[in-house]
Length: 263
Ligand SMILES: [Zn+2]
Image (cartoon, rainbow, N blue to C red; front, side, top):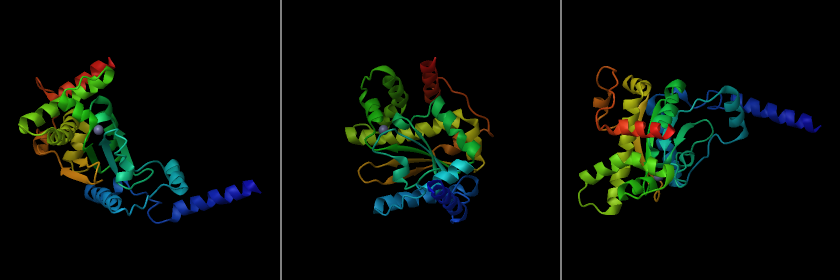
């Protein structure tokens, strides 16, 4: 009897998964343009801000669908591990919607770039580097805090962005300096991705994927969109040829340091 009830439940879930609008095809991947995918992120954050979240795609039917048919996420997000910036919640998304890479300070070193290259593999139309206000890792880089163990190695990856923020904002108060460094660090990660991943660079250049920067405000819940990298055209230049790291190149340092750590 019980087995029969369970079977009926499974059949009902499967039927729902295959017939409910928007579930059968899944909301993602190759079917959406970068702008359509971006709109879904913006709409989700708007619902979150207004307290009108719908918590989509978090039920058994969605679980069954994605487990059975594979994933078709519509956006990839490289963000910080900070517990106050949970990516699916702030964009009001669910299972199989977002391909998320979280690491302190949203740095883009070898492992993160390697993970992001699945964006191309999965045909994800939008890739976001998401920093956040009051980021502890960025603050440590700005303040020059000496952290023990591998934390220090990670924060050192953010230092070039912190230094640039200091040069660009002479005399800025501590809070404003951290805010500037958070943005600069987002741009640095975006630059690292374009310089170190021929695959993602080609996808962006072809218009298949949009690479966008954003900053999440911990206090308001708002995602502030920064758009493409300010020098994206230059970074995509050279007819698809990927530039190697130059002497003193910040990007090279990031990947090199991570490699040394792995060694
Ligand atoms: Zn952070």
